[in-house]
Image 1: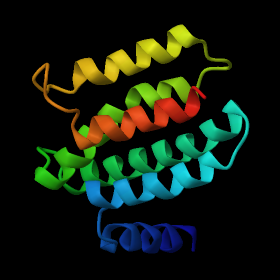
Image 2: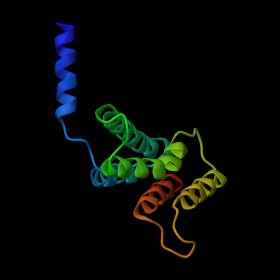
Image 3: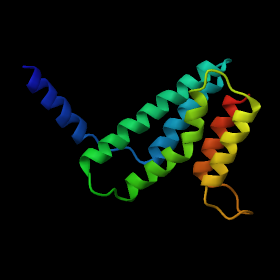
Image 4: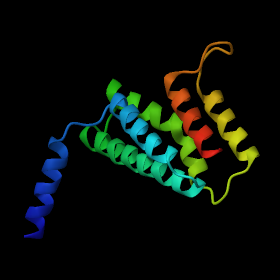
Length: 136
């Protein structure tokens, strides 16, 4: 019985369409709005940690559906995830300092791969927005 339930769960998971980067921007916006209403660093970080878990689950689904090499949709999701990684790391700290915040901002800008005088990419803007919120 358990094996049948597990098989049905796995089939349902494979049948669901995989999230795109656009889906994650929307999910990030909803999480950001929720976190913006919180007053403590810990509670703000909780919303971001939930977003990170959603990313990880989707990236795992992508890997299972196509273990050799990801398509453009998967790569876009992975790029957004890795750009947000400094914010995810910041959210996991017990307490943050101004130095932590400055370092995470610098990590995002360094990894953005834009020309020095070019504006930040949408992915970097999203990560910086989260870092700003966490560092308030």
